[in-house]
Amino acid sequence: MDNVLFPDLDVDPEGMTREEIVFRLKKCCCRLKEANVIAASYKQSEDALRLDEARLEALLKLNDMAAAPEAEIITYSLEEAIRLTGSKIGWMGALSADEKALVMHCWSKGTKEGCGISDRPHALNIKDGGIWIEPILQRKPVIVNDIRKYRSRGVPCGHVRVEKFMGVPIYDGDSIIAVAEVGNKESDYNGPDLRQLSLLMSGVWRIILRKRAEEALSESRSEAELYVDFMGHDINNMNQVAMGFLELAIEKLYSSGRLEKEDINMLEKPMETMKNSARLIGNVKKLQRLRAGTLEPSICDLGKLLGDVKSSVENSPDRVIKVDYNPVAGCYVKANELLKDVFSNIVDNSVKHSRPDKPLFISIRIVPKLSGYHMVSLEDNGPGIPDIRKGEIFERLSQVKMKALRTGLGLGLAKIIVESYKGRIRVEDRVQGNYTRGCRFIVMLPEAQPKGPGGTPGTSL
Image (cartoon, rainbow, N blue to C red; front, side, top):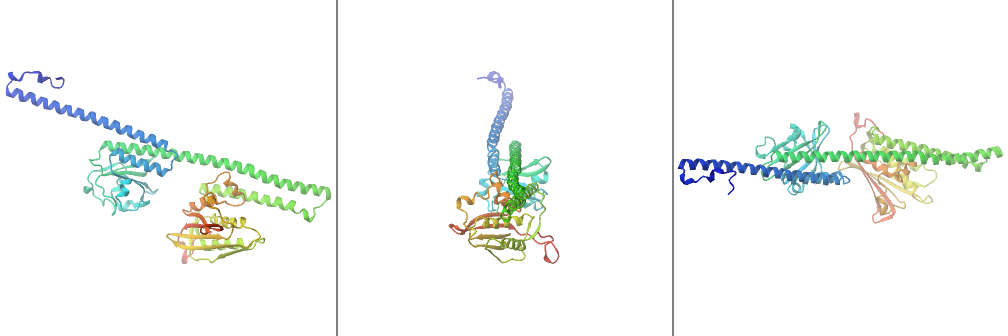
């Protein structure tokens, strides 16, 4: 036997007294304990190294997921956090800018299975306390290995049972922007668990920040290229058209000294082209202001605004257009000056794509206060929109889609505007299953309360 650790065992016990034997056995026991401590230390080092490797593998996988939606990245990172810490449940929440509410966004599979609370995002007030907000209040990682001894209200009614808890705040500079929390590990949470969760979530946040920066840079570059192409190519073409007709008019004046009545087209065409050019520039400016967030919102009377849209389209001298609309009072939304353009664009599209030799019937309806929204329905008896094109018309702006700005906002931009009001827009068949019978646009806008004496809005668009 190799007695490096226990050299005393080489001594023959027959010549030893009882006291000497007991003493040497005690020394052996001490050395056995030291050996166990060394072995445990080696095991802890191996376990820590294995967890570090697993965390790095997870971060590598997350780097490969850079093109995936942000929600998918967060969901994957949460499941990895649960695996690395030996937990059974977990969730993540974003802190509001004023640090008064924690909006829960993501739950692990285990949490959803045992939870009676909706898995849709919902806010928890910081002032209401609870285990969730401890990492925010203390502004540092928190471990609670016996939830029964926790001094506050613990968890909301209906939530999955939490017996052990660990949470870390996620910082952006000096500000807490989110929390990542796990629970119900079989054994107690400890320092290595906290280290793994903190390092993983710090890495995830850096990946998300890089993803957002790359997306913003790409979008800005694309937008700049679009503006250059738009303003350089399209306006130049419009100017060429106007100049061509004006040159014909000048030649006619030089040759005959006057323009005849049938030559009026030589002046009308340049005027029309210049109006389109001015409209194009105006729409690009609106898009820039929308992107920059410089369009101030105000309280808008939706019923009155739709009445103005009805009047403008019915006054067309070249078409028979009938608009069926019964104003609804008391429907207010928070929007800016582009809201009217959204509805005008939808109605103008109905006019533009319908047959000019047939009467066009448009119906506008408001369904007020529908689950916190005012619903506006605009339908027509035009040629409709094939199913294959319904998903295309609201696509993000591209060089092809932005050509629509030449004469109107375009439905892609209309979608961006409506979503900036935290609303939604969609299109469907007027007669279900038969797109040729016309289409129906549905616009959902969050309801707002008027701010002014006597129940009238303080400001109206």
